[in-house]
Each structure stands twice: as C-alpha cells, then as structure tokens.
Length: 259
Image (cartoon, rainbow, N blue to C red; front, side, top):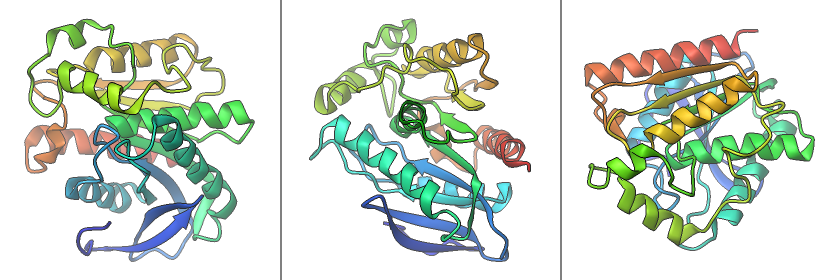
C-alpha cells in the first residue's frame, strides 16, 4: 500500500474497522497528536497513488498531525454503499482506538480529495446520523459532491484532462448512487470545513455549492477556488500553484487542530 519509505515520518500498516490502513506519524514526536483520517481520490475505483502518500507525509510533518490513510474497498468489486459503510467503520474505530494508536482522540478530522472528499463528507454526515461524536474538521479537496451532475461546470467541462463530465458519469454508473445526498443532507452538527476547488474542473461548481450550503446553514467554511488549475493538479508537486495550495491546506489543518 505505502509505495516507499517516507522520510521524517513513521508509517505503520494497521487494520481499522476491518479496513487496511497506513498510519503515518511524525518521527520526532512522542506526544499524542491529532488525527486526520484521509480518504484518497481515484473515482472510487483506483487505489491511492504515490502523490497521495506524498501529500499525506506533508500534512503529517508540516501540520503536526498523524494521518490515517484508508485503503477502502473499490467500486470495481463493491457498490458505493459498501464503500461508505467501510469508511464510516474506520471512523468508528478511530474514535475507539485513537488513544491506543498514540493519537489525540478528541481531535479527529476527516479529509480527502475528489472521490475521497465525498467519502470524508459522507462519513461526517454518517457519524452525525448515528449520534457519534462528529469530526472536528472536514478537509475536502476538489470533492465529488453531486451524483445528479446538474452544475454548469459539469455541462461545460466534458473533455478536460484527468476528470471530465464523461468520466464522472461513468464513475457514478459503476458505483451507484450514495445513501446520503451531500447537497440535501441536514448540515446541523457538520464540522468546520476547508473546501478547495480547481478552476477547469467539472466538479468545481458542486464543490462551491457544498461550501455555500454549509456556510448558509451556519457551518464555518474556508472556501478556496484555485485558479488556472485542473482536477488533480497537485500531482505536480513542484508547481508554484501546488505549493501555495499545500501551504493553505496546512494552515487550515493547523487552525483546526489548535487545542
């Protein structure tokens, strides 16, 4: 799962809620740090890419938190409801075992990019529905949101690289519709959030719509619409735009985890 050793951090393979995960911790810290549960992108059907682990290492080291990378089941073999159930099971396990893992159980956030952003938000809504303590923060990077694909950007970007409306439609056809509609679910109790979108991305307007809905219902939201970017742009980690975005994400995590 973890493609190569991560400098300045320690990585452990663990099971959480019956799901394989990698727990990434700063090598130099012995204190119980907050935990970011991270769901990688990949249209629900691809495993985590090396850049997902590179970003996770950066969040761990620079934001001063532990990161739990979740190797959730994929839509090539499981329906979306099974995937979301597994992700919520990981969250339940984190609530129960964070202290045992050497993490601060009172400061657990959920996050993810693209399809992983959907899984993070869905897990937060699911926790609220079950009466579980909600995450302290939702960290959503160009998230998948709208299974109905009704936004202007979805109509506009049908041939953009990495992801476009055609590929997005195939994604939903493969995995099926979610149990929770993120744009219609009651946001009462939803945690403070960071939502980032890419400019030339079919998902742009649905991420903006989620930010608007949450903030309109009183949720504290930092919305960051990046410019000159396409979906998955942060795979180019040396790009000035990526560096700027990573810094903004790190600052958002630091504020969220401040005790």
